[in-house]
Length: 486
Ligand code: AMP
Ligand code: ZN
Image 1 (tube, helix red, strand yellow):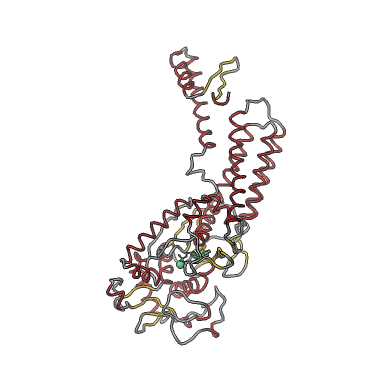
Image 2: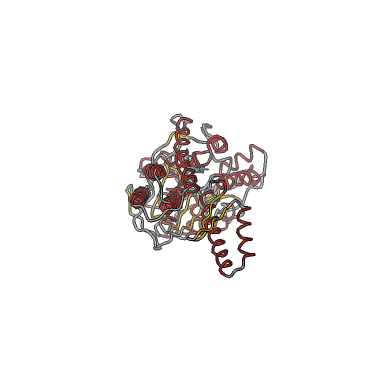
């Protein structure tokens, strides 16, 4: 059952809107991926981690997510930098694609359903451009094929640019440009002599050439997710021209709305400026992970809502590190208490009050996340869960209640990527499993004893003792203890 109460701020409508996917329980999600011309910096990772957070939350709420993230392995920058380095384009892009995948793993980002590479979709791009030409929305020039922005009446709807102020008669050949130079943009670029000599080209009805950047996403979304997507994500710098151009191309082709919800992540800043490759003021995630670890980096991003800029400083990273440590300490405390807790009779009233309070914090957490992924408030709720557990551990806690609280706590941590239930065999999860196994062996031993098969029942006792599990037979049955906790 999906939860019907998610709200997202939509860049397209400039409003917070209730989320209605096209299919009741499925979400078509596209996140603009990396341009693989060098290692992503932690600003890029802010956006990619947001994609992961959104995916996790949609899944937490019961949706099945088809998540596509493209790899831009041909564009102005990849061609420029492979040329500078004197290596074939593919050598450069393969190197940084690998580095991107390594980052995904290190940051425990859920793998997308598909990671299409732009160069694998060139025939589809050519076909797409041909239809735009047939419809009279694109035209051919001496240097390529261009999209006529005057032929698409809604051009500017996402970025809210006033077209008549900006459109000039010249055309834009570069992939990236600013709002105040809005012009017809390249769908297909004829090869330059340098590209021909380096054999960076594809054959097309317009001669040897290569696609422009924007057409890549329109084609990969169309091929893999269909005409209309539920959610499209990217950093704020992509609103114009990239996403504006994606809409123009896709809607001109299909006549259907391209995307229902546009979510844009504000920039990671450093010393008051956008962290960017071109400004050279970037920090790579290897450095940050070596110093702080994945959870701290994730915590740092979660501490500020994704629609607010966030400033990278070591002081704030240290604050994130301490806060993360407080959340982790609660997990350790639970383990210690569960190891040493004695069996008890009856259900103490405090256990109900305790679980009630955990439940309320969970609801606050969920409401915060439903409200346009308000992670700042969700973290407050997580700390409230942690504090409640810490306080409960200080009195005489009930084992079952504490285990329930631990399960909720782990689920919430996992929902925002601060802890991975699936991928990490944590002491907590491990202990759950071992307890279940020990209980199973005890039942088997009881059965053997009832059948007077003392050979097997003693074997079970001895083998468990070798593993540090000591059994005590009483008139009420058999209890067990770990040797270490004696
Ligand atoms: P690129 O590899 O340059 O195409 O960028 C990949 C993604 O990172 C895009 O969605 C960009 O909008 C995003 N991005 C780039 N710089 C930053 C930054 N400083 N903070 C957050 N996101 C960024
Ligand atoms: Zn894109």
